[in-house]
Length: 333
Image (cartoon, rainbow, N blue to C red; front, top):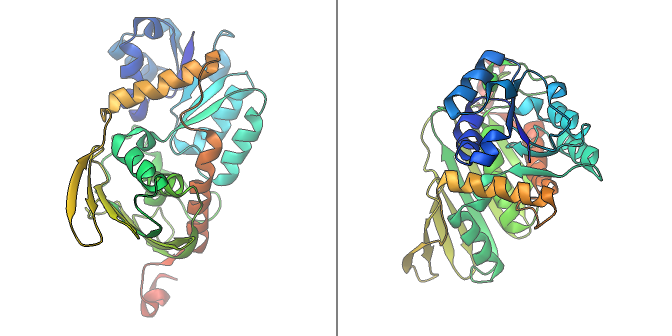
C-alpha cells in the first residue's frame, strides 16, 4: 500500500525513514512530501527511496496514496492534516498532535467518517510507562495521592527548520518547553489517571518569547500533581507516583526499569517486560496504523485521547504568571 511522509526534517530522519527503509515493500512505495525539494531528494538518497517519489506539495501526491505520516512542524499539523483528510488519506500525526485542543478537535471532526487519525505519543508504547498504567489499574498502587514529575535538559533536538524558537505565536504566548516536553508528561498523566487534571497554579519564564522553564501544580480527584519542565538545565528527570498502598519511581528516559517502594520503605527494582528500542516502537506504531487502515485490529492510540493533555497545556498557557518576584515586574512590563 503506497504511503506518504509529509516533511523530511529531524523526526522523519530519526523515526520514520529508518523503519520504512528497512522494509523493501514499504521502501518501494514511500512518497516524500517536502517543499524544499533538495532536502527531500537528499533524504531519499540517504535512505534508498526513489527520487521520482519526492514531491513538493500534498496536491502532487498520486490518487493511490491513502496513508500518510505527518512529520511537519507542529504549527503546520492542522492545515496539513486537514489537507490530507480532504484527499481521503488517513494520517498518523507526529506529537504534539496539534498545538491547541481546539486544533485537535477540528482535525478529529474533519476526519469523522472519512479517514482514520492516530498520534505518535510513543511513550505510551514503552514498557515502563505501560507498566505504571497497569499497576495503577490493578489497584496495587491504591488510591493515587500525589504525582511529582521533573523533566529538563538543554534543548538539543537537531531541528532543521528552527521553528521552535523563530516564529511568532498569533495569539498569546509563543509555545516552548511546555508544548515540547510537557505534551509527553501530560499525555502520560492523563493516560495513567484516565482523567484531565485541573490546573491550580503555574509560573513560567519567556517574557514575550517561548518559555524555557515551567512549574505547575494541578489536581485530579484526590491527587496532587507537581510538574517542573526546563530547556535550560538538567532537572531530576524522574517521576514519582505516591499511592495509599505503594509508591513507584521511574527515570523519564529509562523505558524499562522502575522502583516500587512499600509504605514501610522497602524498595524493589523491577524491569518492565517488553522491547524499549525506539526503532521497534516506531515499527509497532507504523505497523498498527497500516493494519487498522487496511481493516484489521484497533488503534494503539486514539486521536481523541490526546485532546485532554493539550487542553491542560492550553489552560497553563492561559493562566501562568511570570517567574519573577512582584518587585521585579515593573522592570519587564
